[in-house]
Image (cartoon, rainbow, N blue to C red; front, side, top):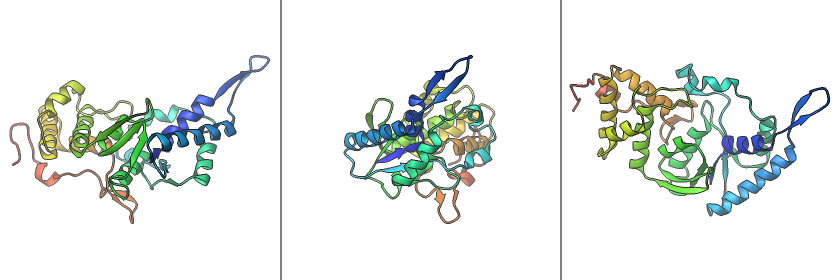
Length: 257
């Protein structure tokens, strides 16, 4: 069981925060860390049973994020969002008492993707609530409603190309303006393999006045890393550059064969 520690810890600590009104219009926030720990242990035990897992790895994001170096707008609005007051101490306790993992410069989603397509391929389930995780081919258990979904390689590539087309406002990247989920499905439906899907993405971008480099830039913001896309020795991601030399001169009217 590969657990999105960022999301589950945030969900628990935000739910247990309480406001207290004192005299003279003084308000404070209060949260019982021991109660957070209890809820965490109960949640992990529940998902271990729910997913029929023997072991769990809790995954957290690193303090640094390579996408923020690629694009200053990436998740920039989240700087103003306060984390729950017990989030950091709960994470510290989890890291001391559980099997946890994070990789330098990566978000937790990337580490989940690397583990699910690498070390634990074909023998894991990702426990998360992030729709972006559907770009990773594996079993998924969604925290929102505890439902299961198996995403195969074709569906994962389809979902990834959809993200490149539509963007993600919550993460601060725009995709191809004017393309929503319905239009993206029309663009990608019937495409059976990644080369066909990626060519359709490039055609839509160039048709709307974007460059090939614009499409690759958006893809690097959308791409949750898979095995082979991170250099563990250098501790840096290998940016999405799928057949870039092949497609660099791609235009709407001239497909590259």
